[in-house]
Image 1 (cartoon, rainbow, N blue to C red):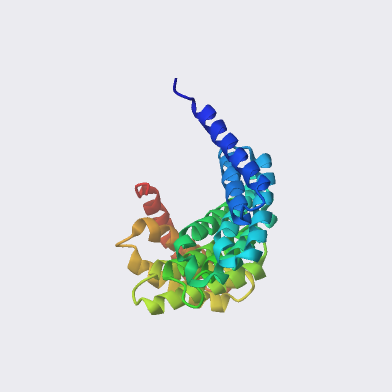
Image 2: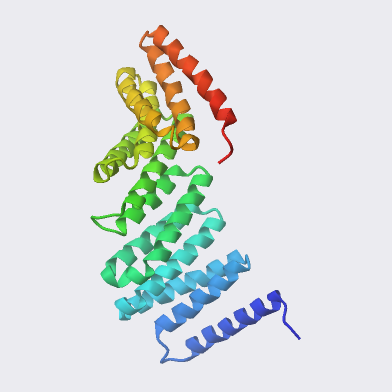
Length: 300
């Protein structure tokens, strides 16, 4: 008779519970073995959505792995990292975002201490930080979302890869826009300025590359400068963004046109604030045409 998925899962859990009991009963068992089995058990419980029970097991796994680290750091390091990641995921599912973020920050620090030995485990570490950043952004916790992106860069030391820098810049742009919506103009400006700095850095390392990112960052910065009363500076950023976007529209209209609309809206507001009503009206006319074009674009 074939077992049902639920019966099979329960059998796995029972097997792991027995393995945990065996490790605890054996005075010669290595703490790393106990930590590893506890972490596996927690993972199975999370998969069955038994989050509260799983978190209790995760706490035990982290404690056991920490003890193992004291005895054999190189051997137990990545068991501890894995247990920290598992527990952070459980905390996220329970809505405890701050504790989840702290756990991932600690896991990142422990991971980095392993140096080159951590390369085989780098993918899961990056994936955990990526998923956490997305989860934080979905609920509007942009400070934590940005923090996860920074932790990802930390994994690479002094030479983070361009995609990691790019996604940090994009997250900064999103965080800046969210801050602007909350009327936190000063914070929005700081985030946008950093995004532009990163985008320029990427553009210098790859001539002709990352133009859309730079244009989007500049457009966001233009709006931020306008909102803090620096419309003159905002004008420079808006014009640079518009110039870049015009070069991108023919090849990538689905990405460039929406960004161009947003930047032109900021440009029109900036021109009006500077008393340049005629130019603002001209930009508004361009916006009408672009909005019509945007409505006709096929969904991407």
